[in-house]
Image 1 (cartoon, rainbow, N blue to C red):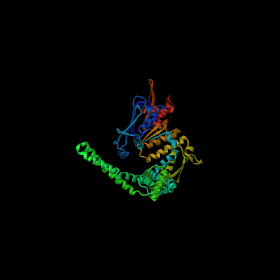
Image 2 (image 1 turned 30 degrees about the horizontal axis):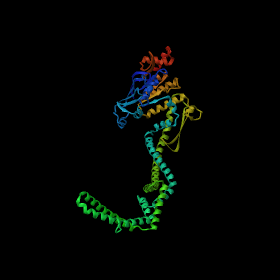
Image 3 (image 1 turned 90 degrees about the vertical axis):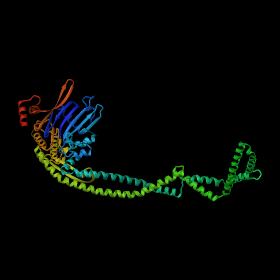
Image 4 (image 1 turned 120 degrees about the horizontal axis):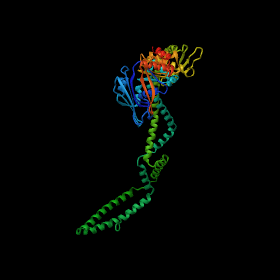
Length: 550
């Protein structure tokens, strides 16, 4: 339960500190006095987003701090899971800086808004007028039924499995699409791969083949040139080799006379040796050179095959063709393996579907058992709230679709009067009837919920008189097991509170301020009398106020 709230520099509130007690607390005040500001401040503590418009003084930070007594609500696991310091008296603080940045703290440990929102689910339920309208929403109706049915844990397990099931379905669909797309091109890719495999490509072979082709294609010219070179080199009297030897012999005679002659002699000797080696290689090349038209044709065919493949695949080297061959092979292998993967994934999905169906069946049966209890309790409470002929028709419609909360669809129909047909809540229930139905729902859920605090924001819309008294009594009864706040304009409800706070607005100089004050017994009499008769309090209003309070 919330035990205290302090607000600084928020909206119309300059500074405020207030303590709360357990039981049933009333908050009243004229329209526009600032009741929504108090709710807004609590909302920020619970993790709602904030902006600079929240700051009263735009040059100072806004600080909202609330203290909660949580020792009875088994929240230690939550604090451990989120690496937070646990305290039975837990303090939550929100700060909004002039820069627009917002900070949040739980027991002085910085937290993000998601962590704050997660914790708030265990602390306070703020019921607004908008929530009353949401009663017509099927998801809200299911949450009510599931709370009575005790489906919370099983739905959590179902949702975890459903998330995994949907993920696998998504993977399977992607595989099937990939298989379908690949299948259309499989035949062509197989043809391309076979063509590349048949070419028996080797890295570097194109350069070798082109060199061999040039030799064989010009064998006569090469042969003629080699033989001519050999003749010039080895002619007995005028050949290059003969002349080099003559030069060497001449230099050998003068080499001892000076180092420069010795150097020339050594160089010509080296040149003679090198030329002799060249001559032998020329002779060897000439002997190996044969005119082979058959080999020339084979090389030409191989090269043309390579050129054609390069043109087809728009590449310029054999290495690139080899890589394409590898990629095509991997792609086709992957396609072959895809059948196994699809079969395996399909089996997993079928197994998960069976498990989901089991969960959904349990959820459905629990709902079937809970609906009569819920209907009976709603009718009983609404009878005391002036709706003696209220009836509900809640019918579960099995579906083949996996929804987030099972496989049921719901018809939640209502009739307020005898002789009238059942219809959708939002179409057949008036505003006052919706308020009473929502209060009945909250009263029932309070028995199943471990929530410490519930705030009703004008749930009494559209009711008055004796019905308002009974609504107050129901909220009073709820406060025996949880902390209840009621923001109300009705004196009949205000008189039922254990404590009574008034929100008021005042002009101070050029400034407008809101404040929240705990009323004494005398102040309560005056406040309730004003709610009965207005600013001019009559004696009868005072007596009526005292009578209501007693």
